[in-house]
Length: 293
Image (cartoon, rainbow, N blue to C red):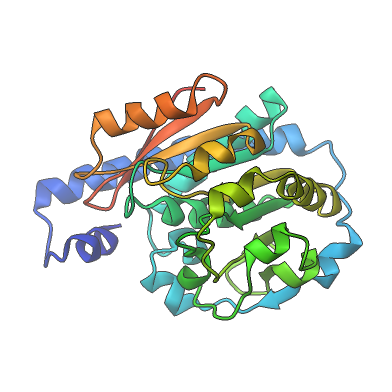
C-alpha cells in the first residue's frame, strides 16, 4: 500500500506516523474482509457450482498483463498491494446486499470526471471473479468516454453502441480473461467499447437497448452485472439508463468532489434509484466506503 500511495502522490516517502496509521487501516480491512468472506462462502457452500452457459465457451480470451495492471492500479489483480483488502470488503458487502434484496444490476458513477469510477469498476469486477459460484458481467457504458479497454491495455475491441443496436453478437462483444497465474476468475465477462457515441443518452433510452441488456443477463446467466457509467453531472446518460440498474455506487474523488456534487447526483437520480454507497477514492490512494442501502 505504501508504494501505491507514493505513486499516486508522487512522494518519495511517508512519515513514520503516516505509515503506521496506514498499516493499521489495512490490517483492520483485511480482518473484516476475512470474516465477511467466511460468512458469504458459508452461505454458498451448500450450492452446487453453477454450470456455465455454452455461450461462455464462445467468448474470446484476452491476455492478462500483470505489469500493465500494476501500472494502471488494478490492485485486485496482482494483490501485491495490501489495499486490495478494501475491495474484498466491498465485494462481500455488495454480494450480501444484492442477495438480501434480490438485485443483480449495479451502476457505478461519479459526479464528474477523474474521480476513479473505472478504477473502482474494474477492481471490483476482478475481486468478484474470484467467487467461483458467481457469474459477473462488467459493461463499459460510458459511451462518450469509454475507458475500461484502455485500462486493460486492449485495442480494437469494437463498439458497444453497435451491440446495443443489434449489429453485433454477444460472443463478438464480450470477452473474458484467459487462464492466468493471478487466479482472476473465468466467470467474469467484459463488455468493452472503443467507439464514442455522441448521442449516448438517446441510445440508452431505446427499447432495443433494454432488450439487448436482458439478453446478456439471460444468455450469460449473470448473477451480478456491473455498469461503468458516465459521470452523472456531465450529461443525462446516467438518468436515461437508470431503469436498468437496481442500485448505484457514487465514487467521489478525494480533494476534488464536493458534498454538494454528491447531493446533486442523488437528487437527479431520485428516490427510485437506491444508493448502495458513496465510495471515497482518496487522493492519497486510500479508498473508503460510506453505505446507505
